[in-house]
Amino acid sequence: MAIKYIPFYTPLEGQAVLGNFIRTRRLLDYRGNRDVVPVVERGMVKYDMVREEPVGENPDKNMVVRGDCVATCAYLKDRGIKVDLVYIDPPFASGADYAKKVYLRHNPALAERIEEAERELSHDEMKSFEEKMYGDIWDKEKYLNWMYENLCAIKSVMSDEASIYVHLDWNIGHYVKILMDEIFGEENFANEIVWHYYNKMQGNVNRFASNHDTIFYYHIGNDFNFTPIKEKREKQTKQIKRVWDSEGQKLVNAKDENGKVIYQDSDSFTIDDVWRLPMLQPAGQVEPMEYETQKPEALLRRIIESSSNEGMLVADFFAGSGVTAAVAHKLGRRFVTCDIGINSIELTRDRLKNLGAEFDVMKVDDGVSLFRNPAQTMDRVREIIPNLKADAELGKFWAGSVSDTQKGKIPVYVPDLKNSAERLLDRAMMSRIVEEITKINADTDLKEVRIYYINKIADGELEKEERHADPRIHIVKEPLRPYLAQTIELDKARWEGPREVQDGCFTRWRIDLRWFFSDRVAKKIKDYNEVSLAQVNKYNEKHTDAPKTFTPLRISEEGLECIEMVSLDCTCSDSPEWHADAEIKIDAKTSRMIFNGTKTQKFWQGYIVSDERPLRLKIRNICGDETIFVL
Image (cartoon, rainbow, N blue to C red; front, side, top):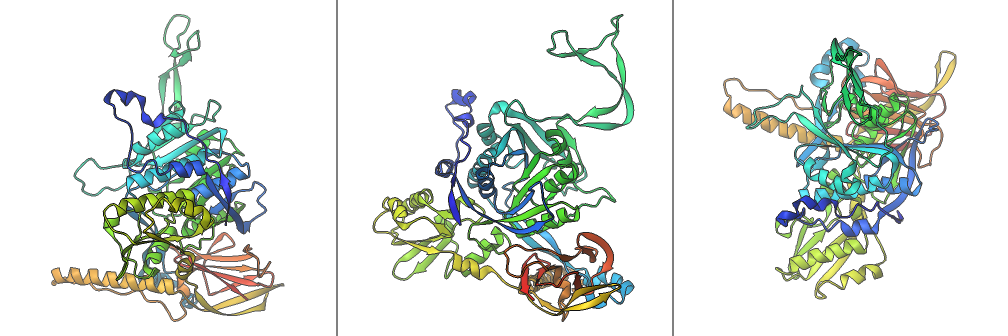
């Protein structure tokens, strides 16, 4: 729940106005850019932070947080924690939906016939579909306000020697660059880095193909960390030796006592601001690729090595697949990373655990139980709220409207779960709502407006802002949490055990999974089959001479191929913390077991063992939903 407000960093005044444009009497402005002002003035909302799972002893206090950027920064600032390097790869306001590949695993019933199972895996068993991770659906104005708030929050927790790298693309980068000039100061802008991913395949486009992203690099002050990165040349060359002039002001050609230019052999070169790195992983290099927008580790290695030292704290507030935290760990840095999506947190957690990292999995306790991630939760909530229909006439601020025979059209506001500022209905948010009501009422005779909220301040305080609305309009406030609760679906399972078994000289505890069912997975597979069949039928209508056949995905009677991970807690039965005392994860593509973080060449046979008697069982399905069963 909300505890208090933590002050944002106050941006530099007027930087984004761009004084060099004054001659044209034009100012940098965009629709709704003042909407973020009350939010920044109010401060970051600080919520409770709960530890969901400790992984190792964690003396460095590394954190993987399920929560958004602002809420995580509020927690860090309140605890006095400063970060030394930030890399973020936020959504690009591209209008695209991003998904992860979801794979049906190996059916444990086939474990006795390994060779035959391997052949079957490439055909019927190893089928995949996509699961929506987040919807990058933004209008530029709302996106820029959201980025402004996030960047101010991040600046609030950066140390005096910190740097920040913001990864964007051609679509939105130039807008965000100006916001960063305002927040971090134009004088602290260091580089516009061009990441040229030369091996990305491009389709036919009516323009020059886009094969690069942009990374903006800023530092806080003059004491920032920076070490030039050198790379080996393919073959040695000769270069003119350069030295500082007698006054130490500029580099000049070095000369010998006879005045001749001195040449030197060079087998390396200093990296410039154009980084030629492949987007796709080279053959033989193992990096998890379950996340569509994942960046290669080589990219993060350059950033972390150049702008931090061992032992420093590296932060990524849009964790994605966890690549920043993974590389930071490999390079001996501490890390804190967060994301609002459960898939992201699971991928990051598993990736770090496989590397032997120690960290705590934390969760921002803002009272919101998300169905997987904000995008999917918002989709479900819109379906559950009675009679809610999309209404383009009202504008993007409103979730839609409800029709009533007596009251007419009732605009409905639902907080955007991607934006932490909207998770608390306070005076700043109510003032914004009243402003939007006034805009609608200018053209429509409104009688009622419905406001859904997650958390809210006292009604007496909200009424001070409601008085500015037309008194004839009835403002109804309703809690959103009952609808959020309806979005959560729990899986079902049957098992045998725990029972004691003899393993050589040791006695262990064993649980055998006999049956598993996930309504979520079943619906995804049903949708996949329907869409795929429709596509095949459409193709066959035009190609009667060479029709395609369609084999639908089917789940076995046991359903165990829908399981991604099984974990046992032998420590406690009723704590909010989960202790993974024994854990099996089934690899997405090979279906081989990863037992307690160690990869094996074995197929899972439907059971799990532990040294101590298990008290709880956790099962994660292939879409990422986790269900805990008390044994």
